[in-house]
Image (cartoon, helix red, strand yellow):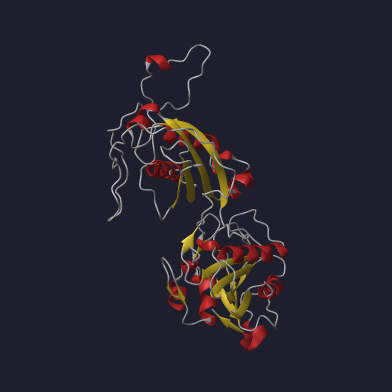
Length: 409
């Protein structure tokens, strides 16, 4: 689901981080310093941290604020564009962060006309990387006048000594980019740098377009999907039959075809009954993650509980293929990472779509993969008309009872 601004990732916002810095192209800026302010919006997934109530699974914004302040007050550079890139790189150094918006304010910029603020806003992510390295603050030696008294606390990050000639270490600029560090001719006299209070609050310059996770992207046209169903508790055939109907009732999902029913031996996990498995071919206008949530709702409606990995279950619904998407996240991976070696998925799928091809690593023609899958001997039989006729799930070979409706695997 999306909001009216199509925001897909969660956000942590830090606004108004303020420090004295010595950035600028003029000598007096490097000598006297001035106030710099940063606003940072971090885009990440906070669900795991919220579910576990554990700081280890999110971003420590207290530490991040100190890091941003250290960039503002740290090694001087000519341009606040470079400051913004350093902040972005420092934030993206945290693996949990997917994207970051940075706005650097220079409210005391040496401008000779009245103004409210100067802001450089950048947006960087895992594709459009920052043009700088993460900043590592190095504590300089304290000048005598800066030694704290017994009643004065040492600041968290001290500004580096002004050094106009110090080189700025940044990543190589793209071909054709303008060089940085160009100093204009000195003016005839010093430019007054009168502090100017920020103007009234308005739309934040960091409210740019967000990175949309591939799993959250709503397709422009319906995409073909492959779903694998399995059950080995209760009345599995009835459960699977109802599950097919429930999937077709999901808004934005159209069931196109259903495979024969396969009875299969469990793969991995504890000792448990055989499974009944089927594959559903469908078409959907939902995003991959919305489809995942919908299938999980169907599982829950049939009493699915997740207590034991590869354990018995009333209903399992897996997304095997979602169009041509190949992607992975904490909660979903498509194509399914083990589909290429699971005969209980491949054999029913090959029956309903003989020319199907599994994309991705280890993929290939489904019929060929089914014939070579490690668990192929565990497929007992296939029931062709299971949606309308009962099959004796307790019998390994029901062909004699159901005539032509069941065939050996």
